[in-house]
Image: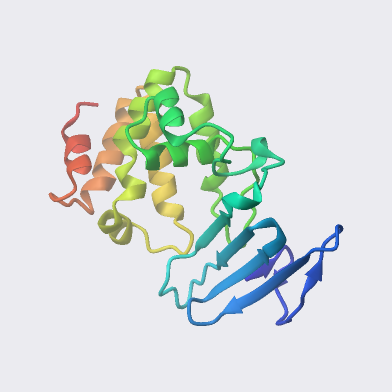
Length: 215
């Protein structure tokens, strides 16, 4: 786990927030997960760090709230996911024209202004979002996003194509695929297909459809 300037020291602390309520941090070694709990608010954050050396469990962040506490999101425009009082994933998917909740969530993340400044972050995190924003037509955005999404979402392809610790190669290929389809670049489209064929898998339907579509 990291602070902005490096590894966090090993400490066991109990914090008290500004209104006198206790906030409990703890580490669960079995699940390799850090918990930050505010019982009075019915709010808990769980965080599993990215470990490039021994990653046996999926890294990420989860946020849970207790409905009985009437927890409110005070900054609905500044979250990477979706606050409960914002748009639903169905509404995001319909608005963009993508096919699934997964695509809607990734699209929502890419359109966020949150800086991707985590340790060893791929530069593609920012450049991919810029490419999505530059696509001139919403229908082209939806079509390109849906056609290329298997690059990010098919585990067999990801494991075959990308051996980096931060997903840099699949993010770059997804960006190149998205730009090729959105901006009607036939040459780049063929280059992306050539890259995809290196890890071709007949069991990935979306990949087959992408390789069969004309550039």
